[in-house]
Image 1 (cartoon, rainbow, N blue to C red):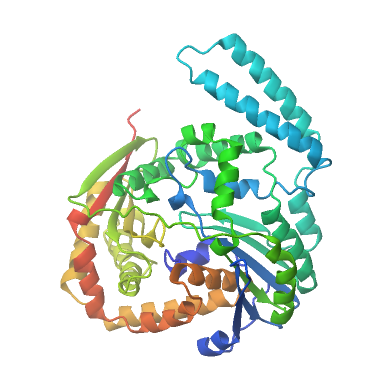
Image 2: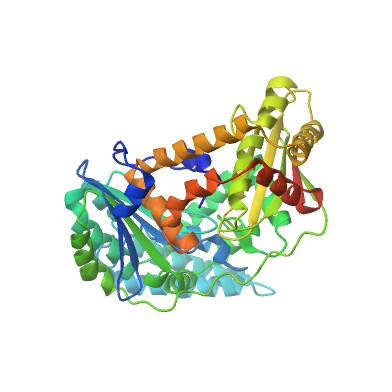
Length: 498
């Protein structure tokens, strides 16, 4: 599944909406899920729950940072920001006037960049262009109704308006009273039928500042950016979701429009709806509103496959920070049969206070203040990483922690995990999955993720069978197969000398 383990998903995503008690079995829930596909290729997955008059919506666009190429890194995330700027009727007082100004801004912006890239930029011409650009920008700003889309959603009762971009996808989230079904249908379909990427150059500044705060000015952010860039030689998982600064500076509004037209088409989107709705009514309204959006063939998937690593990679980042060490091992995509035993391996090795590396490094040897592991990092759709990290405690080092982690990995390669460890993992996994399903919003997310990643939402309900089938021997096998030094990248955060 879309998992950096289900445990981490529960931490990363906020429960939205009512969480009715589930007394059903997985199979009985599965039997209640319905689906349909519009003529334009847009697929809907619907689960009726009538315990409370609320409904959650999850729009999954099958596009993320992994779809980006050099020169436009960060564009998926930037487009997510722009999707809240409104449409031809929402967010503006006069779209016809605004459209003329937006086109003029694009023309001036292109002229400025061409001048800046010249061997000897003419500073006087550049100043004139910048003054004209600012004049047009202020004129366009006067026509904008700030935050009208979000304000409209909240006014109608949206308790969960949100969105996020990952390496694998861009997802849009809403939770409404159930009597606002048609409102959501009309407003959300209009957002993808008639988008207007207004205030584009202002929003680029917002995203660039986000990059500064989360990456450039954050030691762990710097470490992780270098980690992915070095761990992945060819695959676009090497690029940061927020994008490279030079790309963010130079992306044009036309780039975003082209990207939108390529990836935001019905055949490349899935919508999950869970809550107090009638599926027949959902389909009827979907035909009215979402069928308006023209479609085309689903975009070509990422071509590049990460080649096998030929030797252990090492790097370090110096920063005014506590030390930290992270090791990442290449592993296959989430749909590989080894995913379930790798999930068990990650949990037993490094997830939670009873995990092996936490017990050894933190509780017993007291050489680390924090430890952890991730299965499926930084994404899961394509071959990715199994990662382990440790933050050394005072007067201890990255090298000590890495040696202790290696020792625990070696034990798992040479000895079978105990029945108690394996049963505890399986029990907690099932519990966490059921807990996630109690939330309408989480259930809509799980259904859409499964539909896209596995090609069928039904795979969600087979997950516990795969977990239940994991054996101690399989865990040992995948530990021996993947957690080898030739297959790993080690990154260290080193305190900067003052």
